[in-house]
Image (cartoon, rainbow, N blue to C red; front, side, top):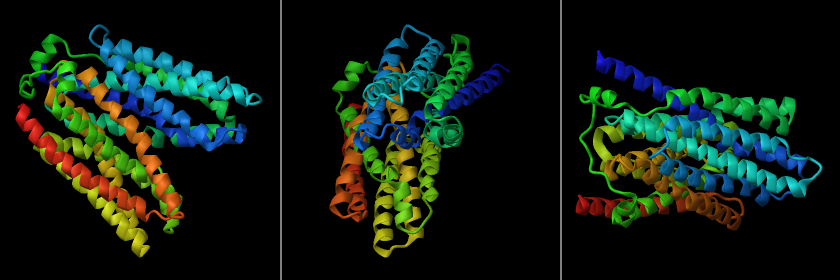
Length: 407
């Protein structure tokens, strides 16, 4: 009976945690907000608007790191509550921008959306995933995948609500409404985010995975395997972002409706769960190889689709892109826990997530340069994706040797 109670409780907590990450994932919906802001503040350049998302990603990573450090002394539900306050301040702060004062509104957007909202999302992301990993020592890949699916699909699931609100109320009022809505959901959900008690941990003995010796953060940072994995994450994420940021444009270019580009977002979410389940079944080594093979397949298929102008082939390439990109964060969570142990997972995981920053800068920048140089053609971008896949495969081989040596 104890095990049944434990099992039911952990799946309930996982469901709540996933809902919280769906709401936090709305920050990835910056593309929904960019155009409405551009219509109000016509003096802002495209690069100035894009900088907002870059700042939010930087503080997302920093917020995760701070939350990881705090987790040793503060319960995860308190971290979620702090996240709720930060997101409320961030979204309400954006809603107070003055449409008639563009010079003052831009720094306000950077501070409230970039710094406050970005940090708040980092708090929730780290707090939820770190807590849930303790409930699922036997299914960390699957549990991470389900939660990250919610986070990855947050903008897609809530995007229609945000779009309708913008059309009816305007962008600034929409931020006020969204801020209050996110605050309420996180506050209520925080009561379900908690670490297992000692008795509950004992009740999970039948499902618990073998213990993994834990490394301190300093020990992890000194290990060769971590830095090879970190570079692998940068390369794999940058490759996906070369295409994901242009998915709708790619679909239109090859004769499909722009909405077809959303297949990347759907497969991004699906990939997180699928790769997570595979990780639990066959381990890190083969799961990473499968993900790399899908990345290579995505690039090769997209090149073939571009050369033949076959929209069906292009769509298959977009599907593969979404699957491989979705697998990356799940692999990161499961690998950090399995390789370096659960004790310092919150901080170790947050440091691994810093790989998102160079990837978010390099991927779109390389794609933009190649597309401009090719007069709007995506073939060279798709070829670059294949090149990233080759590099990722080489890094996988090196990582295997490093992990074997450190074992």
